[in-house]
Amino acid sequence: MENHDSLETLVVVNCVFNAPLILISITGNALVLAAIIRTPSIRSTSVIMLCSLAVSDLLVGFVAQPFFIANELTASRYIASISEIMAFVLCGASLCTMTAISVERFIALRYPMKYQAAVTTKWRVIYVSIIIIWVCNILFAVFYFWQWTTYFSVMAVGICLGFFISTFSYIKIYIVVRRHQAQIQTQQQAAQQNSTCAGNNFNMGAVRMKRSAVNTFTFYVAMILCYFPIIISLSLSSISYENWSKVWHLADTVAFLNSSINPILYCWRLRELRTAVYKTLKDILCTQTAQG
Image 1 (cartoon, rainbow, N blue to C red):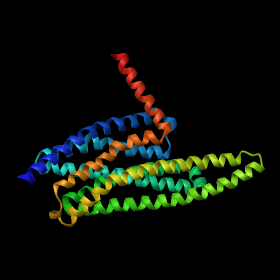
Image 2 (image 1 turned 90 degrees about the vertical axis):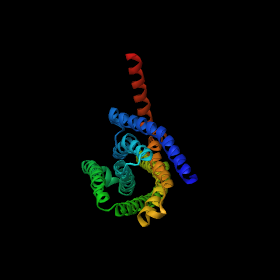
Image 3 (image 1 turned 120 degrees about the vertical axis):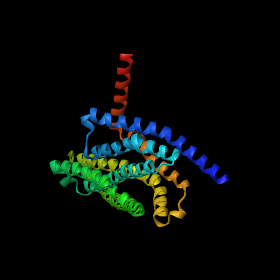
Image 4 (image 1 turned 60 degrees about the horizontal axis):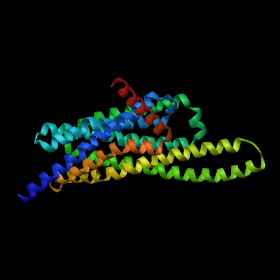
């Protein structure tokens, strides 16, 4: 009886905690997407990939979390299946997109000249990568109906692989940034001796690339903190379902938390996007006031 009451309390806490997260996720990511659509000047390869991330986070709030709450409150296996599939497809798309962003930032820093020169190819690769990420995550849901334990196992491995690739990319980014800092010092010394603007241009480009890498690294750290509990949950459920309990549903909530945190991080770390979001929100409020 005591265990049953504890589980009921856990369900209530889970649902109550998810309710405001849904509102934050939908509102925050919708504003980010609206700002990007309304402000073409801020669009870059990184911002477009963040746009894909915002879409998956928006759908988490619109679809995954409501089904998760419904699954908590009912005993329907049908709702449970939809909840698990939607959560893993959307969260998987978020994780894959973040991994792709880390790789893209590494390439941009490691090969800046080639990266800037291949403008058409670069944009085509970004769009194709986003499409592949979404299609693969959707098609991967078929494994759930074949054997759900295998599905959970592969999901756990996939999350770990994404973390490994991102970690490797950011270690390489750190090495490149350190090298750039040494080059900046050399350029500054040369610029003092030769009054040319080449050194300043190089410095500004290096600073922008470094700032972009630091920003995406912040998003990456937040994702690791939010997704780590669900790796344990998936591992337990795939190894032995007897070792898994409903308490681990809290891990899903922590993963959903990332979808609410991301738009806040975007506005904190990306000044141009923050300005665009503020302007978009101001325009929406002014329009509503005029209509009222």
